Image (cartoon, rainbow, N blue to C red):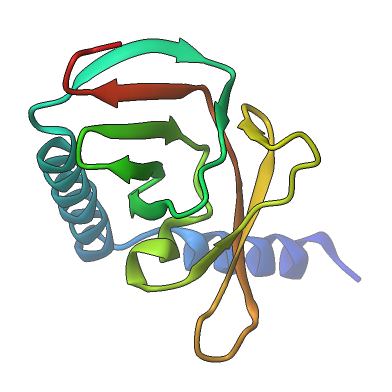
Length: 138
C-alpha cells in the first residue's frame, strides 16, 4: 500500500465531516432560537446560587433548550443545568432517563435519552451545575 491513496482517502473522509455553509447557518439559527426560548421560559424568575445538586421532585416537567435542560417544579420554581450536549432530543419528545441512588440529581450525573416511539437509545449527557430560578430569587 502506498501512502498517496491513504492520504487521498483521509482527505475525502475529512471533507465529508465538515459542515456546509447552509448547515452552519441552520445550526446557528437553531442555537439562537433555543436561547430565545430559554429566555422566555425563565422570564420573570431570578436565578439563585448555583449548586452541585438539586432535589428530585415527584412530578417535574423536563424541557431542553439546546444543551440546556430546565426542570419545571412549578410556575415559580425551575432548575437549569447546562450540559455538554447530547440530550437535545428531549425538545422533540424523547424521554430523559436519570438514575440516582441519593434522591438528588447532581453535577456530573449522566442522563440518557430514549426515543418515545421506538424506545431506542437516542443520546446521553452529563449535568452541569444546577441553578434554581424562582420568583423571589431564593
